[in-house]
Amino acid sequence: MSADEALAVGRRLIEALHTDDAEALRACCAPDVVFWNNLDVERGIDDVIAVHEVERRHVPDLRFEDVRLTATDAGYVQQATIRGRTVRGDDVRIPLCAVVTVEHGRITRLEEYVSTSHVRPMLEAMSSGR
Image 1: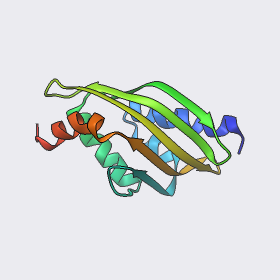
Image 2: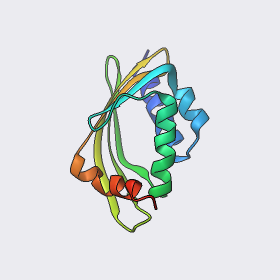
Image 3: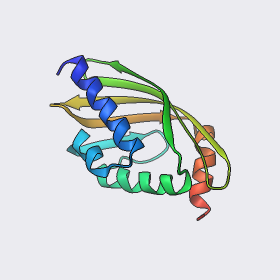
């Protein structure tokens, strides 16, 4: 896979997340894709979509800003800032780095690294039940 093809997958993934398009998100990923982040367990695509829906209920304007994608031999690295405001009124600003493996035009593994302290406002909003 070329660097341009891997980066195109990354751009489609971000667009799918911005537009809450579950089918487009699935189309970016291999059926057995594994999503991992340093705060949680490994998840499959169905769990990722479910968690994203919960995040959106509590942070309706959740978005990626300052996105930088860099091609690697195995896929790409994404650096970005997740921003939004919780329904409780707390600002969300989460710097992240994701290492993404792409095979045959689809994501097979995404490893996301974020700071616990930056994620706290979003997690508190999600656990409040509001």
